[in-house]
Amino acid sequence: MARKRITVAKLTVFVLVFLLIFWLAIGTAMFSAFFEIMFPPSEEPEDEAPGTCAAEGERVGGEREPAYCCGNLTALNGVGGYEGACIPPLPTAAYYVCADCGNGVCDIKNNENKCNCPQDCRI
Image (cartoon, rainbow, N blue to C red):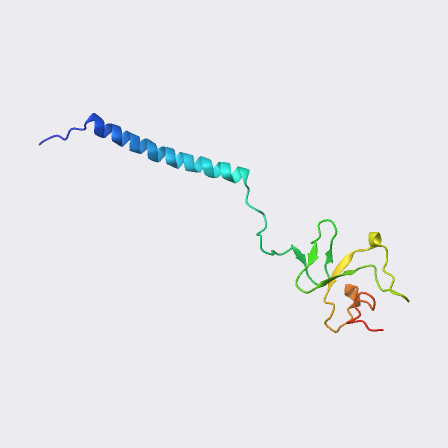
């Protein structure tokens, strides 16, 4: 039986290929970990996710509240109805609630009134 001889050149090539594969595997894992630390994934998708806009009846603009109303909803001053002339209250005392102004229903629980939603709340 003839014995195959492994030459130094073949052994060197085998070791180099093994080291290259090992280096690529370790390097890729390290790069991936580094990239994830430097650029963590966003907690919310970039599309409009739940919680990024306020639904009808929800408040907007305050701390830990959505910044805007969803869809065609309108942010209406939340202090309450106006009496007499339509003079809005001071903005510092106000909060805003999302309402479906223009749907033909004067929804006072969502702060619609004759001054901020005349389409729905006629005099």
